[in-house]
Image: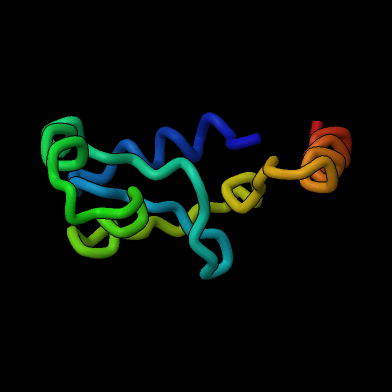
Length: 89
């Protein structure tokens, strides 16, 4: 549900980790520079990727795309995404 323009905006950032925000809320499509792959995979001090991102630090980019806030973890989430898609085509 993320717009092409959102990807383009995030890719303009030269920072190692970039997190989109929409109306001040952090969203999905976290961009991580490939030079961090080895550290992510080999450092056992991180329980999850979120831990790594918080410790390493990140930059946020405010975007005009509500799609960055959408999850599809449950059937209810899926229904919301379908509704959003139908409304925003």
